[in-house]
Amino acid sequence: MKRIVLSLMLIAVLGLSFTSCRETKEKTENAVEEATEATENAASDAANAVEDAANDAADAASEAMDDATDAANDAVDSVKEGAEDIANDVKDAANEAVDKAKEAGNEAMDKAQEAGNKVIDDAKKAGNDAMDKMKENN
Image (cartoon, rainbow, N blue to C red):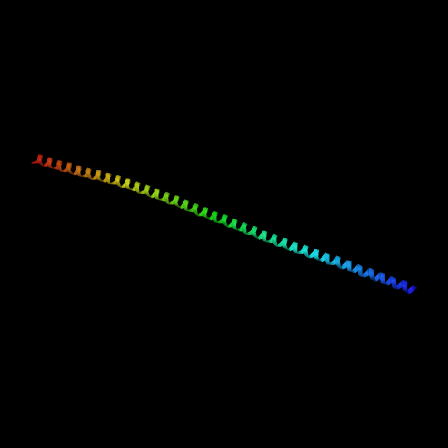
């Protein structure tokens, strides 16, 4: 009888053991499936996050390039305007210098003409005076 009871107990323990292992196996399989699914979801989420970050970085870089281009164009325009202003100032100064030189030349010519006329008048007067003295002496 002891053997029968012990055999039954052994069969019961083995039966429970197999049943327990079967449940453990199913639980393990479920846990593995859930872990696999969670890993796939996490990988997909990570890939989406990386893609979004890359897109955001590309957009930011594009905007930075646009801003830099605009700033460079503004700088070029500013330099052009400054150069045009300087060129106009130089042109105005040159025109003013030419006008002053013309005035000075005209004044010099007028003074030279006056001086020449005075010399001529003085020479005429001296000639007339000399003629008068000769007439008186004769």
